[in-house]
Image 1: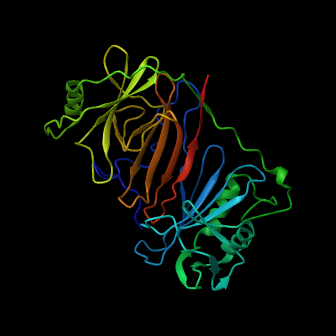
Image 2 (image 1 turned 45 degrees about the horizontal axis):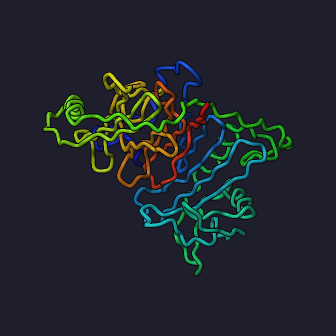
Image 3 (image 1 turned 120 degrees about the vertical axis):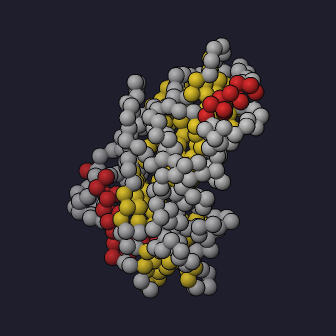
Length: 357
């Protein structure tokens, strides 16, 4: 089975998450949790103990394979949400799935089309969870009763036990794999997400980057020595005193990962590569370096968003969002999928809250 691999340029240019080399000078140093693989299931939990388990294609070339996502928050009474599909490469989120069967036995479950697939109703979720612990194969059925796809349950029970353990539910009535007599209030409350304080918004126009400066920065980063394209940099106001520049980088771009060079400057003086409080997934540089992939400034949210696909299908990679704290960019969301096996649901492994004060 394919996994996200190290590659240069168009490929996945770094491990999913390198060990944290530099601790944040202020606040909480981001430490995204690693994903775990149990046969045909992968699972991860974030720093507030919210967990998500994903069923992968049982065979990378399976034409009848479907994926499934099971997520749960850390609160003692947090519900379980299960979404089936959609098929890899589907043009929309519609699955056509209306029923489920495990090892040939139809479950009392109702499914509703939602963004990202078909969601199982609460009563059906209870029945499905019981089947996941002992079943071998889940079948998704259409309105005519015909099979639309299959989901391997190999590793499902181990993934559920891992979720119970990380959320400290083992032995409680809320546990998915190993329930016991302890009451729900024996589950500790969810920890609070760390806060990242961001400066006030500014209505000032961003500082511009001259074409000559963009060309010089691009030439410096381009090892191939190819001539400059003349592409201009896009600039965005971060706060009253700083501007972000996104410089298109033709040297490091690939078929499905567009590279940019990211710089920050005050209203006077030189441009410097942006700094982070964690490693970026697409570089070996710890906390710095101008190259980023598929990077966009989200002015409404005030976040710098980027992602790196492991392959063109988009079923593996890492996605991150950063908030500007006045000096560097701080990680507020990370989502990952380490297995290139059909799932377009990426698992959150870190989250923080951006606040303005």
